[in-house]
Amino acid sequence: MRIARSMIYTQSLNGMNSSMSEILRLGEQAASQKRINRPSDDPSGAALVLDLQSHINSLAQYNENITSAKGWLDTANEQMGTISKTIIRMQELAEQGATGTVTTKQRDLIATELRELQVQLVGLTNGDYAGNSLFAGAAIDKPAYQVGLGATVENANQTLVHSINGDAEKSIAIKFPVPTATQNVGVAAIPFTYSEDGGTTWKNATIPAGGPGTIPVQLGGVEVNFEAGEQITQDTSMVIRPAAIYTGSIDGEADARYYGANATINPVASGVFKSPIAVRIENDPSVTIGGATPVEFSYSLDNGESWIRATGSTDEFLNIPGGQLDLGGTGVLNKGEQFLVNPVDSAIRIEISEGNSVQVNSVGSNFFGGIYADKATGATAAVDGLPPEKNIFEVVGNLIASLEMDDQDGVKKCLGDLKIANEHITTETGVLGGRQNRLEFALDAHGKSKISTESRISAIQDIDVAKVSTESDRANYIYKSVLSTSAKIMNMSLLDYLK
Image 1 (cartoon, rainbow, N blue to C red):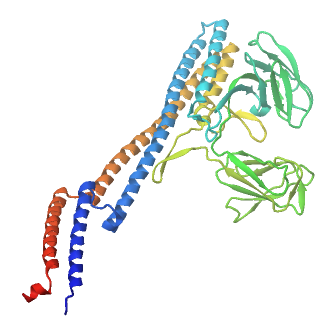
Image 2 (image 1 turned 60 degrees about the vertical axis):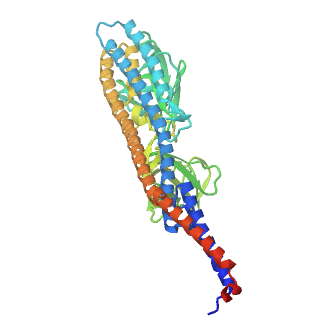
Image 3 (image 1 turned 90 degrees about the horizontal axis):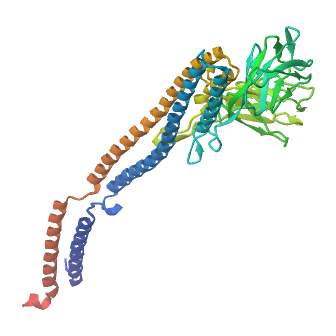
């Protein structure tokens, strides 16, 4: 085989370039302290490093989430600490008011301070973090509570009072000296007496005939809306007293949507719903809301796979599992038109690791109780799911009323309830503490995971300094040898051979 001179030159250049490339590669590794500086250096190793680096980046994002969650929970925990101090002061005042040696005037002064503490308590439960309400459930854009009025009804249904508007400096006592054993509101006028000064003086008033629905009665600056059809006896009495109205979202609350041609429809769902409910109109061809013909419908609990026929209704309220659907409008509904009732998740969760999240907000009604206005009817009642003795706002409202009515026995009962409510809030505070501990554990786990991952990345891509130094010396030696040999070979010619 003939070896051309060009082949000699090419081989010499290739050898020099190869040696120089090796020197440059080792020099780059020595400068960067990395074995892998580009994917081509080690494709599988580079891919593994990218995966591990992605894990570290996700840990950094989770740590940012944890920082945000800690802000929420730390602020809430601080608020709960101040709330606890406020309740302890309320207990001290209740103990004073329950003492038999305290005069009527002194109980009235205690009630005045309690009114201020109640307003303070409402303010604390309206605490926020970065403009987001801590205790309003999913309704983070508004305060959880507002100061209002409630009613404590004796010897009649609590639903006797639909709602109350206005403000009163002192609790208002109401008595019903009706002439018969029972009487239905709205059938005929019902006289009663009321006192605005703790029972010292009494004024006459009347619930007029009327209905259906509510019948408003003015008592000074307060409007009491009585529910038509409710029964009143000679023993019925009530007290209009301070209350806190919960305006946030509650567990199981639902959003209602209408899918049809009637533009006036704005449905509202009331009740507690655990899963989505679809409602389908079955009247053929159509039906008028509130007309003589009942609204026939069926509902589905499995996203429309199966439908259950329900009892029709002649008004705008349809009974469905968990509550009612207020059609929210007038006019015509056509066969096949649908409504969707979808539960709202009141919890706001922040992801702190893959598949693991922590709730940062709270549903204030579960902590502090209060009263809640039904979104469909506007009727107010104590929040569901919380026993009366754990409903701190209702307990405080009744305590104030008992003090202003100089009712020592009532004060004693409220004192016992106040202790139970405080224990309940302490338990709920422990829930917040548990969430804070989860954040600390997650943060610690992320730190250890980052160290472990960085160690693994280092093992894959970091150089052995001593080894690279030795290989670099070897590569330089080879390069010099290649240069020397190439210089001698390239100077040779045919004349050198002939000699």
